[in-house]
Amino acid sequence: MPVSDVLSASSLAGAQLVAGASGLNRIVLRLNVMEVPDIVPWTKPNELLLTTGYPLREIPEQLADLVAQLHARRLAAVGIKLGRYLDRLPPEMLEAADRVGLPVIRLPDDVAFDDIINQVLTDVLNRQAAVLARSEEAHRALVDVVLAGGGLDAITDQLSQILDGTALITSPGGQVLAQSPPPEADWPPGGPDLWDPDGRLRVERLKHGAGVLDERGAPVAVVPVLAGSLDHGRIVLIAGGSPLEDSDVHVLERAAATAALVITKELAVSAVESKYRGDFLHDLLAGRVDDSEHAVRHCASLGWDIDRPLIVLVAQLEPGAAPEPSPRDLRSAHERFATAWRRAVGERDPRAAVVGYSQELVVVMGAPTGEPPGEAVRKMVARLPGDGRTRRPFSTGISRIVTEPALLPQAYQQARRAATVGHRMHGPGSVEDFDSLGVYRLLSLVPDPTELTDFMRETLRDLAFGDDAETVDLRTTLQILLDTNNVAETARIMHFHYNTLRYRLAKLERLLGPFTTDPHLRLNLMLALQIQRMRGL
Image 1 (spheres, rainbow, N blue to C red):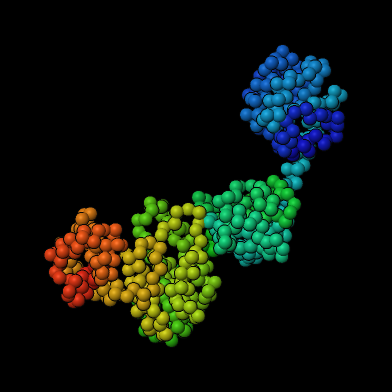
Image 2: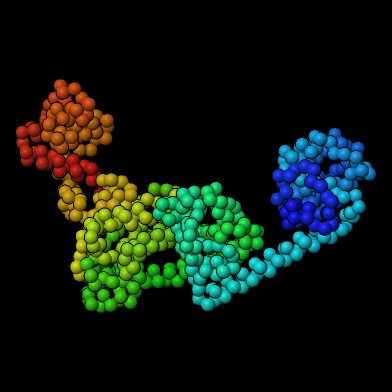
């Protein structure tokens, strides 16, 4: 119980707070009696220390230091009787107590220590028993929910009935997985201090336990959802206005344990289902399912609709972009990645197929209506949440629209090619659709990469492979010259004097031939430069 409540006990009627008023919220868990001057080693945190002043009568000049030592031991408060052994407390001691917020209480002369100890300890134990009883009652209610087959939504609904507020369960990065019905007015509370524009809860700003948000003063409590060493997210209570107590945090901790069981069960079931779904989708995209009608029926049994215009998306993870985590953490990261995609795709197309593999994720979804596929997919990728930790980057490729299941293998290859070429040309995080690749699409269709390399070497000659500054600079000059077809404009773009660029142009023509007057050579050079950019595909 806090020191402020201790002062209201009947056994402390007439007690006076003489210093340390800022520490009245310190918690009292136990009591102790000071009978020797060197009491500090025997004190414990959250203790109310009682004394008659007898051990202090010979060391008044050391009382300020004693306050600092007791504060360092996280003492709750000090109760002193004055008059018999100690007439007054030194001002230095009271100033020290005010400075560190350690309450110093002048006890009534006629009260016995055993009366204070009995009453305060009884109140503390009664409160602890009430907290345990409430926590146990909440635990039984939550276990009943789980035994009845309820999921995370059922847990948050039950919590909102036990506690006064709105309960949420989020991913480790703050994406809301389940939520009890919020109040109709003034929701969500906390504003930008607590919520991202896309609806992500900023759990990184919340600490374990109860607190008050800076904006609007909304009381909030948060507890991690842990299963062994795996972090499955957070369980959050945003109170309806009444202050949160430690007992509310205890209930949340019980709910977090129950939520961890539900999430672990769902992951185990999902792993088996994902293996089965992934194997079938892999066969379908590899062209090993000959009967289209059977494929449509089988996909319908899995919750997928492939009997409509479709597009295929491939999200390829970037290898080696971050230190490899442990096998368990890597699997958890892949599962979170796939879950985030399922949620983003499901908002647009609940009948889409989303399957994650070791280094890529595949989506087969209905073709968007009213906007280009590339624009729709970019919006989905933008909604993918972060998880508060380093996430391996990925590139996304989009196929053409196909109208029958037999064309899905071709669409899958188009999406993979778009992801690979997009990553090469624009780096991690690119979103490319197959039809926007232009000449890169044609070049990537050449089955023998040696032919492309030979063409590049024969056309660019000494500029084909060099990575030194002079060669790179000449290639850049050549690219801008071909793009603008204008010497003066190229000089302006590259901030060169016109005569300097004329000198470079003469050097390039000595290396490559008269490309300024030969349109066929210009075309070959433009293609060779694109191949040079595509090295590694």
